[in-house]
Image (tube, rainbow, N blue to C red; front, side):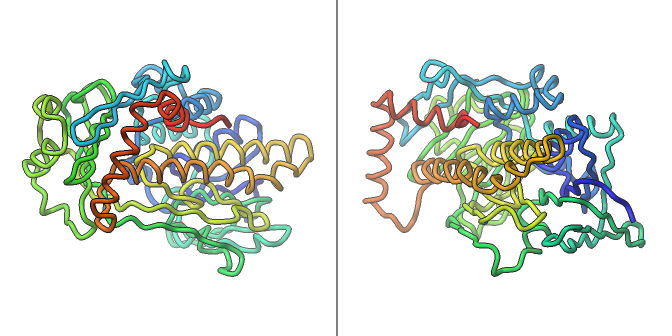
Length: 390
């Protein structure tokens, strides 16, 4: 049987970042991941980093490429039926965000772990948690047909919404809060320069649209679609036609089109699990919460969860104090719910909700007009978008 202090289940950015922070503090850990490294790196995810997340990556020693290649954005544009409002992050609150793909963050963390020889076991099948409500938890897994077992002090569940960790908690010990939205985002990735230097969020009577990017030469576009839509029914031409129809004509005309590198539909939901600690098992990242991507909070929330958890574990081993571990769930959830609120607000403002009718659209219009006309409202939006203080 192997032995380590912390078993981290999941080698996405949350698990890899936690492992990195613990490694730098001398807290030994093992990462288990059911998929291959190539599969993990193939996931197309969000790409907007809060200023605080960028600082966490710097402190973890994995921020160099982000600083070289990431795109610093001092604002975003929000539009409603052709009217536009720029949210000037820098001018309003002196902060910014960095556009740098989640895949690239994962790559940097994976490379750092490999370079330093940190144990990460990929394609670990049948991962099972044992005795996390006792003094000596264990995690078993199957690799190449052989069953292995790791004894540990703590288990960190960083294995996502569909992972084994949250599913291992007795139903009587956990509460779930969920809002499933009646639409999804159809996203297209293309090797063409972005249509604008900053992100453009747009509300249109036909639905939401977003113009984003991954680099100066790679764009990411989204349109709101019904949940029963199928990717194969959307040719590239159909997608671009729909996108253009939802944007300001000047922006629509400037879009450079090309063959899709990737096209997929992501359903939108808000989800929170409470609490985040169960004996010696802790949940972090998408295992604990899901936010609609409208507010660009998913990866950023995972990073702050992991920072809180790493600090608590380092305090436990370094100072022999359990204060951080005991307070982790409440501390993380306080921030999670604020991010859920902002993501919900952005989603409510910018999408078409079939059930709200014309009254709902008038309320959305009033909300947009208020935000556009009020410096205080824009400052609140800027504060939330760039990230609340840790």
